[in-house]
Amino acid sequence: MRISIHRIFPFLAGFPVERVSLRADFIAGLTVAFVLIPQSMAYAELAGLPPWIGLYAAFLPVVFGGLWGSSNHLQTGPVAMISLLTASVLGALAVAGSSEYILLAAKLAFLIGVVWMVIALLRLVFIINFVSRPVIEGFIHAGAVIIATSQLGKVLGIPMAGNDHYLSALLGMFGQLGEVHWVSCLLGGGSLVILLLGRRFFPKVPMALIVVTLGAAVVYGFGLSNPDRVARPLAIVGLVPAGIPKPVLAIPVGKELIDLLPGALTIAFVGFMEMSSIARALAVRSRQKLDLKQEMIGQAVASVGSAFSGGFPVSGSFSRSALNFSVGARSRLSAVFTGLFVLVFLLFFTRFLFYLPKAVLAAIIISAVVNLMNFGKLWHFFVVNKADGIASFFTFFATLLLAPHLEQGILLGATLSILIHLYRMMRPHVALLGLHPDGTLHDAALHGLEVDQNLPSIRLDERLIFANSSYFEEVVLRTSEQFPDARYLAIVCNGINEIDVSGTEMLKDVAGQLEHQGVRLLLIGVKSQVLDVMTVSGLADLVGTDNVFSTYDLARHEVYARLPSDMTYTI
Image 1: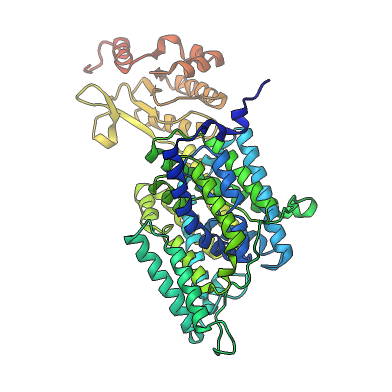
Image 2: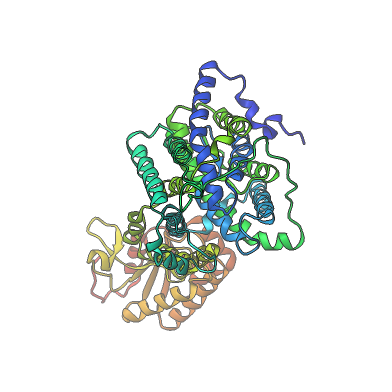
């Protein structure tokens, strides 16, 4: 079996590159890099890692994600939610910021990459449907609240202490408001205002780079980090190692593999949801055909690249991808340029980060997650479908209550969502039908129609399978009891797309019980694939082929033709 070179190196299909496209990608890559550099450092802090680890995760992963993905605009790299989950997973395994913690972060990235690659190669992309959108949104909103409040402490100069319980740590932080570091508050709060206003009025200007530059200049100029000049020095980034990240052997084995795997699965799933949503949205706007399987391969290669370059878990970024699109990127080379600009920064400019205040990094994180918060969306889920709304809000509050163990929140939400789905499947909608003046059948209760007393008819709007066969049997027998004088009862089957053995055996039992009461069971509008199963199972013979009709009109005329001539009725 021959494998095309373009299957292994999909980016080769984009060559040769037109000069106009190359120029557009160069400018887009540079623009995104201005945003990525400060963001990546901030997200590394959020993940419990030294800031420069974020720069390592902003080099090779960005390049690999662009080259091996399928989207022309998706920008891979450190993102807020994945960084928060990384801290949640690693917090119980090592001390944040320690060498062991840093190595575990790289190993976690490797494991996530392997999970993504397996999903892509085995064509298991459909697993995205296992968790409903309301559950994911509830989890994302809770994560955004946790991220924002945890960074708020850094802005105020009173960071949250402890990793045992998020809410207790949050209350402890608010209990120390008397110890606010007003200089930190001014720098962080001012940076946050600039970032939010800049996003609103100057969306294409790299405001993050501006606040980083201004923050570092203010700290250096006024000596705000020097204990000899101020009573309460500001927390700063400090020395950032220059140069290309050194290769790291980041393959978890033994107990490490067991400890990291549950977290890796959670992050892989959430990252997949985020990435696919972003990539699809951009594909619609750019009218590009998206290959989700190839995109997952790109994310897998990027994650492995992050692992071996000493980085941490990465995913597709909504803000940077949208920026990449808005400034005119033409191809995946824009991501390559972004990564190369980060490399140039690593080689020559890291010394300028020494005086960067951590309060400014916290402001960058808060401004980024504000976009994730849209509680109107959660309420919209509730308005559209109360069960989905309940699942969404349940996931939101469960995640907050169980933080920092975030994976438990989404697990509980997913469990509730599945239980709701099973309940819906077990108790499907069954309509008692009436004949509308236009000659069509409708739900009698919904439309205020009369039910034919001689031929009561019900319709199941669901598959007839083991999960709902008992419930449907109860409805059929209850309908027969409701119309004691009827000698016929019809099941309109045009809403049934599938039937299994449990369904056919149940209908055999129902037909027998009705026959014992002097009532004949009719089947109307049976779809071909369902009729094939009924025939093979013997149900069609038991009911009788003369009691299976293609339309309700044919069944009704036949029933009235069979009724005794002395009965009073109208057709």
